Length: 122
Image (tube, rainbow, N blue to C red; front, side, top):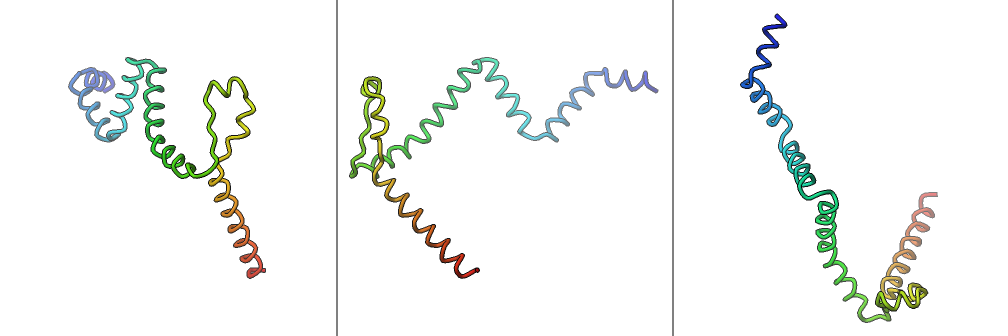
């Protein structure tokens, strides 16, 4: 019995059927994993990570531009890298004024809502 089973598994037809069944049962995630592993093998891990970081940077570029447009009417000072190398304490002066004011007002509103809620509950 064992020898017959071993000879059936040794046949390449059954191996290919088993492979097709695994792919059908595992779904596309298995193939995506193989593709990503192949990309890492070909390009190397550093290039693979760099590709994804560039994509993330491009994704957040729009949000950065919206933030800078929101802060354009305040006293937002963004020093250059050369200025930061010369005077590192300029990091303390990067204060997004409108964002801080909006955050402060939001925290006051949330605090007032919590106090009002706790006064009604207790």
